[in-house]
Length: 222
Image (tube, rainbow, N blue to C red; front, side, top):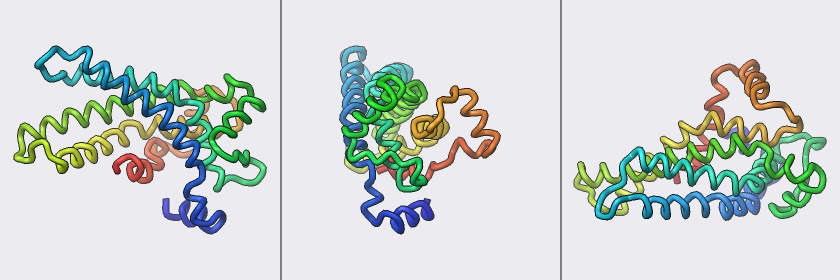
């Protein structure tokens, strides 16, 4: 991670660390709004009045809302991945998107709407379902446990501790799918998913599943 940061700063300056910011914001506007909004609405609808939702219910509802969020935010996610990786790519592979919207328009024009906006959609939707289930369900469960079995109560400390623990759980569970999703979205080939995974495994062994875990947690934990 540190060598990647230094490479980006040397070649693009500190501003290079914020490449893809517009696409990242666009992704959050189309992905997080859906996954959080749908989750809270479903939890309110399906939890019996006066009772706490069970863990299986939380996992099911958060998985569904995450899947819907992954589908709605896929196009912006493709642009986000590509813009963030631009700084470490050779010139022949750079795409030079000016911002998130410009990237989405250029992708549709040059690659076709479905081939670009929905590139890697199923790994992304699967990752979103896993992320939501592991992040939101574990957050709610850990928060209730801390309030029940520790003297912390419903305080800011409880919320921070629950969030940090949920970030750790989500990063670990989602890491393999996250790697696949990012590689498929940034790839210049149209290989099938199985052959793509087989190629990664042949080159990098089992360790590929947790490649980038540290920066992923540093993004998700806070």
